[in-house]
Length: 124
Length: 329
Image (cartoon, rainbow over all chains, first blue to last red; front, side, top):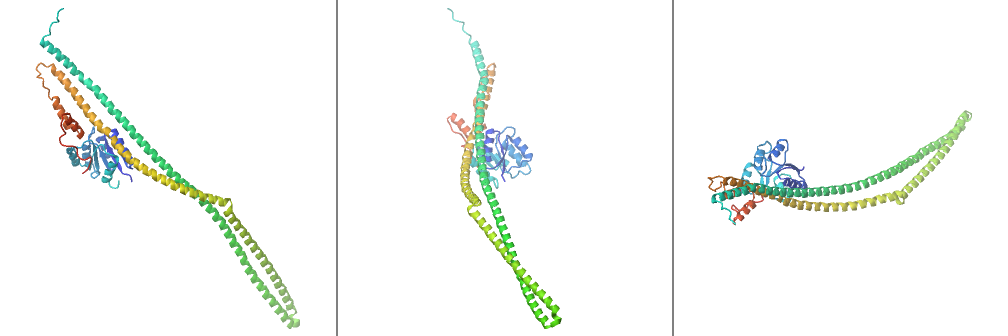
């Protein structure tokens, strides 16, 4: 059964390029343009096998989103990857503390992204 | 000709300050125009990149659809051949079954001959019995006269029964032979049809068609395999290309940072213009442009931004480059 992935990014280019990459590789993709929209989808019943989120977004950023997702029932062990231009050690450490599973820096090639996804999502 | 009167130094300074203030006040709209150009350029690249991705998506969908049609076509060809072959088989089995049933009937008719032979045997024994009865009636003399008549009738009956049995047996033999002959002819005709007629040609054609379909299906499978391989390669290459396309988001963020900085310069100029009119202003700005620029260092999210900043001052970025592009915790 195809795995579902929620992508959260305020950039239309990022959303479409990552979505296309994942579509091509047989994943089901949901998108949200910020943390608020993503959280609404998750509390509304969406249960993705993986969440990929940007860090700097309007309304609600990625770090805040990760913290809120971890507090939701049923999302304690859902893998969450960040995909961001941010690469500094302090921000990474904060992401790790909030509960991120891994840190990816933009831009990332499709095959590399898929490889990481298969590492963190069982059965993907 | 008289020289114009000299402007007093204080008045000249006021004029200069007023002009400088006006120039500084013109800076925000100037920067506003530049920011709009930057925003337009960002939008244009985003539109172009989105169009490229959409085109990639459409090409992949088309490729997938073509593969689906090819798969379906191969399946349909095989189904058609299988149906024709199955129908031919049903027809042949029905014909053979009819012949077998008729052959069984002929055997049953031939079995009737044994019953007739039994009747013939009984007639023969009855005839012997009648002769014995006639002999015994002769020994009985006058008293056996009536019995001799009965014995004679029995003798006649057994002779007629025997004759009828022979006649029935002959007819059964004849009927059985004719049925066997007819069946042989029917079987021969069927064999001939199978070996040299339209039916045979149809079967042969179906067989050839099947072979061709098998060959073409094999070819199609090979083509599909090649397409699949090419598609996988394409997916890998497009995946890499889509990764490169993400540069647009990186560029957008850098431009947005520059836009913010330009706006800040505009605000700084307006503040400076306002200060020029203040009599007790000492000429210092808080924060000054240098401080404002330093603040940007803390706001950079990319190593490339920090490097560009440091290079502008002839140095190198502190804290080194960012961590690995992929890190799992």
